[in-house]
Every structure is written in structure tokens, then in C-alpha cells.
Length: 222
Image (cartoon, rainbow, N blue to C red; front, side, top):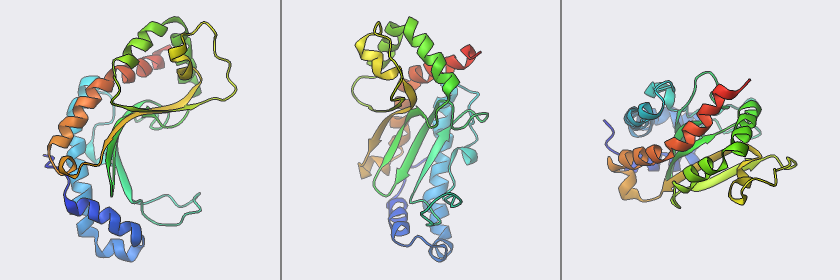
């Protein structure tokens, strides 16, 4: 059961930010496990109950939903061995980064959550563009249904021609490479409360229409 994060959760990330080395991490491994990893696994297990209502075929094993804290240093100029933030992700195990999924992330200052596609999947986005061209009102309806509570971050192809016939409201959604729609909190009272899981689950339910739009496009890829 997720009982909320604690002050020690956020203190760990702050301490790691200033002591990003293996000696500090090994000396404080119990702090990490007790205050960071175990609560994240508990939160992933609870959020998974809502994810099942949207797509029970996503990866739903909590230990696999939670990221590793170790950084991949092979192609990075920054050789700090650990991230000072972590995340939970619910994804298609066949295409973890190129398909739409839900996520939540945590750092020393905040907890965020949302839905999106991390890497470009050209075939999926081409299917999205084809559907959008013929069913723009459907997409407008689901975007309008989100209200103004969420932040929207779009990564787009710069030179793609956008059909003039498309309604102005969806033109920015046509040349997509990737995107995320997110919410976040810095309220320590909420972040250290079991209520955090309920808030995220309610937003996942609201974002499910966006997920289903893009997930349905997979079946249309030829």
C-alpha cells in the first residue's frame, strides 16, 4: 500500500544531488531503498489498478515499472553515476519508447505525471496524421475534454506541410514527433500523503482518451 512519500524521500534526492558518487550511494543504500525505491514500487502497484482500466496489456509489474537510479554513462558527457530523479512508466514492452504510455516522476522538488510518447515512431505518427485529417472534430473533443489543468509539450517536424483544411485548433498536433501531457505538484503535504495516488489516478482516467486515440493508431499501421 502506498502511504505517501516522506521528507526523507526528498532529502535523499537533494543529498544525492550534492554527493553524486558511489561511496555516498553505497553508504546510504538503506536510505534509498526505504525512502525512495520501496515507496515508488508501492505507488506503481496502486497506479497500475487504474492503468488496467485503460489497457491491461501494458507492463504492470511494479518492479519493472520503476526506473533504475543508475545512469547509462556510455554516451553521456556527464559521468555522474546516479540520477537525482526517478520515474514510473506504464508502457508497451514491445516498444517501450516509441509507443504511448503513462508515467510519473519524482525529484527533490516535485512529483509529476502524465501521458505521452518519448521517442518518435514515424509509422504511428503517420497513422495519427491520417486519422486527424479525416476526424479532426473527434480529436478536438478529446483535447477540449482535458480542460486547462494539464501542460502540453509538443515536439514537431519543422518542415512538414500542414493541410490547410485542418481546423486551426489541431494544426499543431499534425506534424508531431513526440509529446507529453502532464500535471505536477510541489505541495509537500500532498506528496507525503496517500492521497497523491488518488490524484494521479484521477488524471490518468482523464488522459485515457488521449492514450486510446494513439493506441488505436497501432492497428492502422500497414
